[in-house]
Length: 229
Image (cartoon, rainbow, N blue to C red; front, side):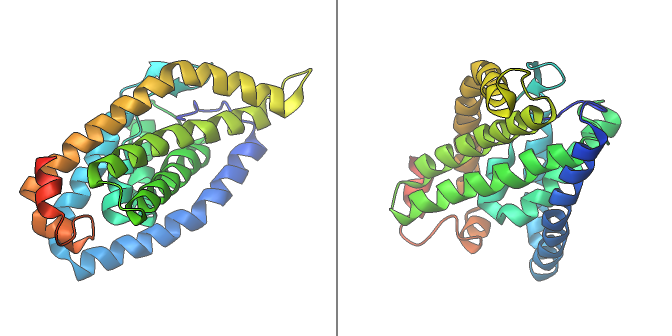
């Protein structure tokens, strides 16, 4: 994730940009509807975007041309659904590329696809599956954030493997190598992000009960549990 500027071949960079574009466009429409229908949600939207920006700016050097760090996308995906997170994640990545030299403009499409598209959708899917089986809210939040983080790096490993296949074992061999290197730093980071997301959700359950209830995160009979667990 946050593949460096100019690191991907031009054709790969363009292809990932094309793949990401429909998700971002759909997200813009979803975000516009949300803000128009519920103007009071802008504060929580901003907080979700800031959470992603701060966490994903804390980078640890990893594979050449990339880095490991939390992503922060699980929280926004759980609160506002993955389409809106695609927009917030894209804005985050764009600002980081322009202001922090973190990632790049040519690799923006690839970084958006891994962090702002696949990560939120994978994390949200796990969160919803666990909630369907009546797993406690905070446990579901933890695993949603954990999977959102880890799946981002699985996609990044694939992107790097496709661009730089191993001379002997091809794409599968490169995928195993990139994934193995990422796992050393990313597994503990994913656990840490899951715990931090739970902490933030607990704080929100105390300070923004009405908004979380409207968003469907808190439901009748669970408010007390979500507050005290």
